[in-house]
Structure formats: C-alpha cells, structure tokens
Length: 291
Image (tube, rainbow, N blue to C red; front, top):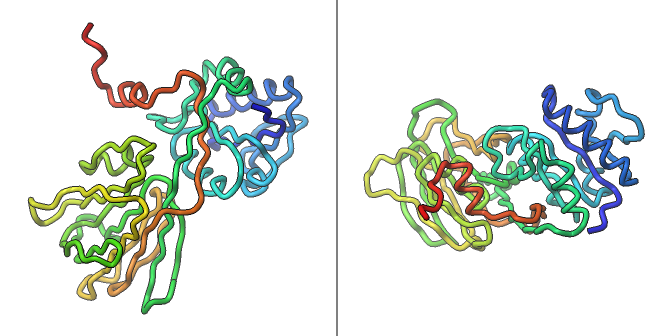
C-alpha cells in the first residue's frame, strides 16, 4: 500500500507512548514519508521534520494514521477520522487493546508488512445518536463502541420505552440501556452480559443495565434499524446519554433518543496474520487447542 503522508496520534503524558512515537518518526523519516503529528502530543515530543496538526487536518491530509495508546485513544481518534478517506492502525500502549493490534516491540516488522500491502483493511461502522425534545434536535454525536442511556446518579433506576423502527418493543425500569456495535460488543456491553458479535456482522445489540425483571435479556437487531429510547416524564432530571464513555449528552424527562447506523465508517488496518478469534483468546484468556 502506498502511504505517503502519515499522521501520528498518541496518548499524552505516557513515556511508553513517547518511546513508540519517537521510533515511528525515525521509521517514517527513513521511508521518506511526510509526517503529521497531533497537536497535543507534538508539545511533548521533541522531533524535527514533523508538522503539528489537529485531528481534522490529519484526516484530510494523511493516507494513514497511527494511534499510539489504548482503545480509549483509538476511540477518540476514530470518531473524527471516520469522516475521512484514511486508514487507521493502532499501537497498543494501553490495557486490553482490542482495537490496537501492533505490539510496541514489533512496530518495525508490522509496519513493514502494512507498507508492503500485506494487511487487511476492515470497515467498522459507527453509531449516530440524537436527543430530541418536542421533536426538535437538542444535541447529537457519534460513537464507535456504544451509546448508553443512564442515570446521572449511581444506582438510580429510570423508566423508558424502546421502539425499533417505530414498533414498540418493551417498557423497562432499570439503570439504563446499552446500544452497542459489533466493535463495542467486547467493551461495556460485554461487562453487562451482552453477546460478542463478530465485526463483519451488520447488527446491533441492546443490553439492559440491571433491569428490574429477570425476564429482560439482550436483543440483537439489524444494524439498519432505528432505535428509539423514549424517557418517561416520571424520571428525575439527571439523565444522560454517553458515547464511548467520552462524550455526555444531557437528557430530560420526556426526551426521545434516536440511535442509528452512521454513514461514516472507520477503515481499520490489521497487519498480516490478524485473526479475530485469536484476539478474543488472547484478550479474554480463552483456552487454546487441546491437541
């Protein structure tokens, strides 16, 4: 693959991330690439021949973005970079690292494969969410992993109704609801008892959070559905919508939250040899072959 301009995005105030970024700058300089570096991390990296940039301009100008950090760093970058025609790869300097494939010790070898075209480019869809009040849009944003309706106070229940494509599904009293993409099925949704959905499946999962009934179970639906969460007017005024645990949108009693698949997609690059089930085994501690 011909990557001429490469953007670097890093985890701030992290010595390991700094080490990887310096290695990347040397590697990319030797390849003759133009290097753009995200503004916040540029202040911490003393490097020559790099151009500080915001995420939007990295998305506009670069062919490839390398995110150095954990899944949180990748999620923050992905919500912006998904708007542009750019490939994105991650170097894992976090904990689990479901979205960051490259081991810091293997950066040169793995990037050699990617630059040689020995890689898999996978499209991951995002969610867009809007909060409507009296049929008027009050706020909106995007999520890579999940959209969560929850109370602003810990251990407080709420009442709401769920509609899928305008068809009533159920009313519920619970701590909230998680609407997760396949990418997000191994994140917060998994902790709440939701199913793992392979990335290529065009589906969403709806996972109730501590529902006040034992019959409430996660539901997997077509990703092209519109999910509507209608908040009862009997709730308190401290409700929220969370996008990837990064962005919070306020919700008032009587509001309607609409969630649907975004037209934007993240082009995630995996080095040669990537296997989703290998990732699950390694990250979740699943057993290996018996024989």
